[in-house]
Length: 192
Image (cartoon, rainbow, N blue to C red; front, top):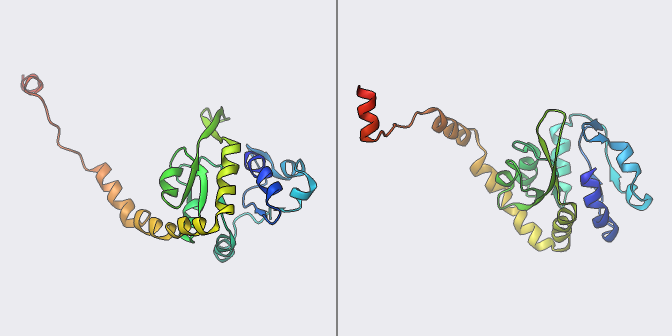
């Protein structure tokens, strides 16, 4: 619902914008068809939410490559779909929360968290500042040459930072114990 609310004014002022959603139709966020039904008819007719479940990779790649902007209000731990989109050269807009800024890097814009709410798992969900989120998406739509330049940074950002080798290097660094430096008084205590 937060994405729909953020995108409603963008779609009202950009009559050629279509919003393609790829997500479950029902989860803790609500029932997607119900949320879409609350939009004005002229906007609702440009929101598509195919209920495909897991989409084949070639379809996802085609959708990413057809997009002008990838928008995610999710506060994911990593954000694989964000990485997939920017790897295709599509600029992304996401939350300045969790690992999303790291994933987006120079290939998009992050938006401040508007508020947090408790979820059923006993931790917080972050919700965007919906107006700022919509404005970030609109900016990229209104400045296509800047959006293309930002999006062009994505493939190299993903290739440089999100390889199995890079992940293994980080994991190795976490697993290797660092030498412990004791102060002289601590060393004497340990020796006694």
